Amino acid sequence: MMKIAVYAFDDITMFHLSVPHMVFDEVTRQNLATWTTVLFSETPGNIRTSEGYPVANISGIDAALDADIVVVPSWLPHGKELSDALRHTLHTAHQRGASIVGLCLGAIAIADAGLLAGRTAVTHWHAVDELATRHPNITVDASVLYVDHGDVLTSAGTASGIDACLHVIRTRLGADAANKVARSLVVAPHREGGQAQYIERPIAARADDDPIAVATQWALEHLDGDLNVDQLAVVAHMSRRSFIRAFRDSTGATPAAWVRSRRLDEARRLLETTDMPIDRVAAECGFGSGVTFRQNFASAFGSTPSSYRRRFDARA
Image (cartoon, rainbow, N blue to C red; front, top):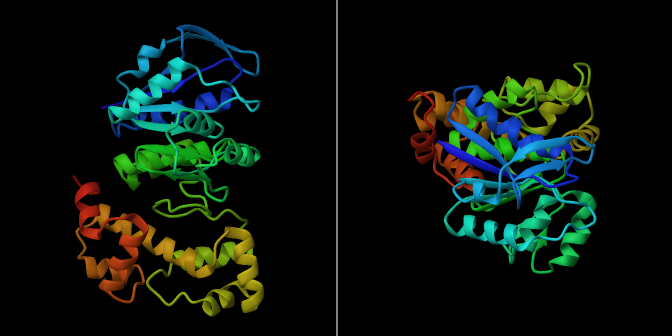
């Protein structure tokens, strides 16, 4: 059971308002868990979106008092003032253990509420300088899709709110659940760049005749092999130097970092869906030894493979 309260206000765009509803409600539609979402504002009634459409039956601010997650899905670019009522609601929810999520410009509201002091955050790239100037005690990282501190999460601009919401599902229900939601919504379960996200199989973003797409698809089919740069360049029919440059332009990562992430993605899937011994998982995913696998897994996910399997065993 999970209740998500989404803050609604006049002049919010329909897209920003709909993202958490669409992603989180899909959890229930897919019978993965029972999650409910509710729109709330300082006063119950109606709001009008920036496109001019009225949205009726908005709940009052009390609807957020028992929410497990409170989402501020956006904010006004000219700097909407944070009301005392919303500030109090965010603080109260945070103190009782609810997760606070600021999507896109919503990160500004979370920062104004004082929940990001001394932390790292991200927002839409248009507002990165504004957030950094407004809150010099916050480290603003413009390069990531989202930053999750466990209790407070912020995301980059617009569509990255979908990535952040999928991440919330992934951390609470596991990678398989997040992948099912992503497939149902016909969105990529993983986008390169930013902090680690976990997927079953990344979807090539380029045409079939693109050499980088060809190389990445081949790599996904040979994760247990030696996927060094020279081998991948041969598959792409490119020189080593040209391949490295084109690969970074295409994926936002080095070939080595991308391969390591994909191996960890596959390892997580195997841990969730099989009883394969840890050392065999390491071999299937191309890690040289069980020790190397455990070190990489702990570094990426903050958990041992065994602990992760106990938490997210999809076979149960």
